[in-house]
Image (tube, rainbow, N blue to C red; front, side):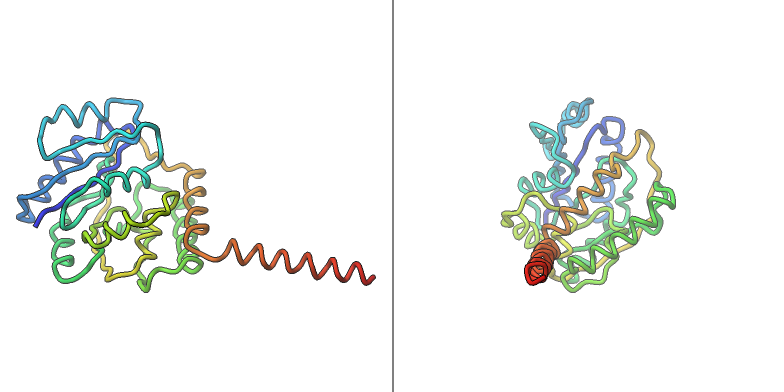
Amino acid sequence: MSISVVIPAYNEETNVRDTILGVKNAIALAGIKDYEIVVVDDHSEDKTFDTVKMLGEKNINCIRLSRRNGSHTALRAGLGNSRGNAVLCISADGQDDPSCFSEMIKKWRNGAHIVWALRKKRISEPWHIRKPAQLFHKLLMRLVGTGGTDIDISRAAFFLMDETIVKAINDCPERNTSIFGLIAWIGFNQDFVEYEQRSRKFGKSKWSFVKRLHLASDWIIGFSGLPLTSIFVGGLLVTIFGFLYAVY
């Protein structure tokens, strides 16, 4: 078998090298020899691209986007350039611990098409951000649907996908949407493992409140009928009130 690893990165020159080394160690422990690592530089303002290129390894490739598009678009760019039987998608900041990779591979070999890695604790976020995020994800799951899975996607950080899922995502024409929402919605056999999240060594998270809000709107618009239903109900109410006023 062959494994592809997709790593979206934005201004992670201080973390990306250690992340790659950690992923390589996890792959070696899983006994996999045929692998590739695709780093997608989301038009960083630092030397992320140069740092990856300086590694000089033939099975490590770096793609630099022409402008900043966000991590989910970077992930899709990486998926479009992957060739493995399964693809691991993991962030470049070093907080995600790939030591659970062997367990993810076992679940994949046992028939899971998607294996989520769920954080046991969201240690990098204060409670006033963490609790609303969990509540909001639960609300989104009710509005959008989860493709038949009850996995808590609010704790998901990285994931392993079968090549069947990769092909389905690459064939999807919708581009301005959440990759996590698409995977949760798409169905298939989904499973999960849990891991302890690590602290950041350098830098800080790029996920601001505005970005989270924008991502949530993509989920609702892309995967639910809520916008159309709201427009229909609003139009119906305006019509009824207009008719009543005309009668009056």
